[in-house]
Length: 115
Image (cartoon, rainbow, N blue to C red; front, side):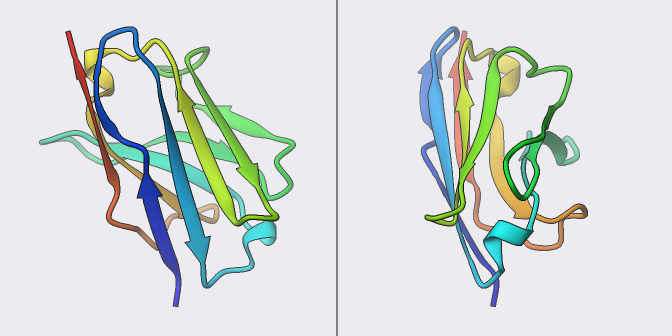
């Protein structure tokens, strides 16, 4: 079965940085695009960033462009999200999911940014 394990979240002050990691198993990782999503309390889950199967193409939500960087290591079945210049509005649970349309979710990792 598909398993996704996110880690790296925490409490950080505005302007700080965090690096999230996602370990994926149960899929042919190198054949799947991977996305990072987030969900804040009372809000719908939204796409933050996505990376193509080979890693050559990335896309970002406007709200994180220039601050977040998605990357992947296909040899390790890992996808990462480097988050810089964090803002209080980035506070959310962060999740990774494979494919063009997300179907599988892990437990997520909580990011809290204090002002």
